[in-house]
Image (cartoon, rainbow, N blue to C red; front, side):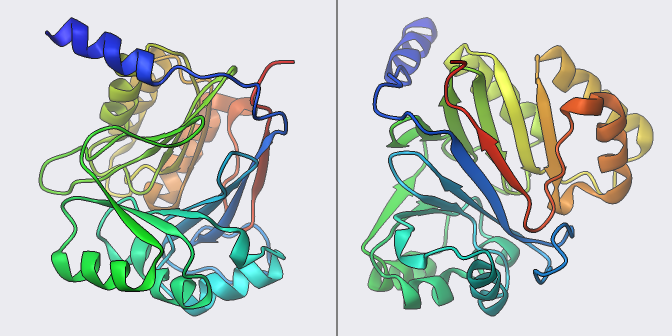
Length: 262
């Protein structure tokens, strides 16, 4: 049964690139790690993904005023956002949601099933729709949620499927960054091109971070862009390990990634 389930999931994740010709653009709208000095940094994370079937905002940072201010400076049209995906319940990832919905109530919001009822209900009252996620779920063409992973702190990550490989976007990686990558690779049976977001390694010792680096390399992770709650020293270790395949993911950073190798 386990093999059958895996085959079904792989088939469900199959796709065609015919409908998506432009590269995707990943923009860091909110982060405590600086990059663009014109933007305001704050504890938390929010990442805008453009160029796919839907324009997606992954997490909303902690402070709605900072989120909206940074979007204005980046000349992001709030009305273009069609989908919001919240990784987990911590305020530094959901705090800006209300401010966003007050400006654009036409979005669908993907929430982990473990979210409290009051947040589910309040969001449902403000948004176009609320989609509750527990298992892997298709969001739009080429984009899936991992579903809730972890135990005490449940969290969903985002997966973008490209010919270059899978792009995994994490909020804080509370279930463990290695566990998340292993889960995605096992069920999709595809190579991992890029892992980005918060890796939650601030309190880890160097030897522990290096062990995680070795495990991610063994999983074939081509590029990394750790930020937010990863921690300054762990980020330095990732940069040394990946060299030219390390990507700065500070506030205001923008990545352009072709969906195909052509």
